[in-house]
Length: 162
Image (tube, rainbow, N blue to C red):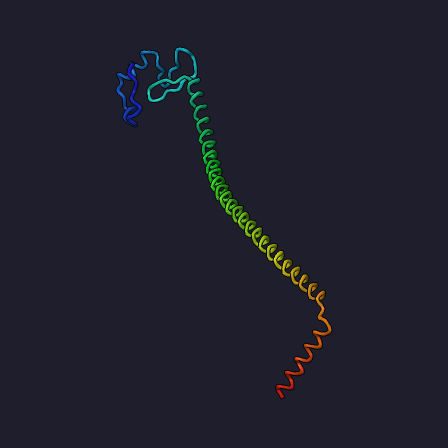
């Protein structure tokens, strides 16, 4: 059986009469005649296609249309997920940078507090030593002879300057 070449476009529809006779002689359907198996058939370019094959093809076409719609939806979802992933990566990088900044800030504050504590301790030590000196000076009262001597030295200095 010689089948027409469907890849040639309109040239296949101009097949010769001998091809049509060959198809009809081998039990193929011819437009206007019923097939021997009494199944619903369709004549396409000189060939018969049974109805169940036609229904299967139609179902396959519908399934293909539906799958293309779903594929487009999945591609859109994948694109949005990629965008979300990039946003998450940028946010993670920013949050990591903020975390490092906070960590360095807290270290700087700890160092400042330690320096402040050292300064306060040094001031406390100076105050304590001054308190000890004041106590020592309070205990060391000058004797009355020493006071009289200081007064006489002052009087002599005034007499010499006059």
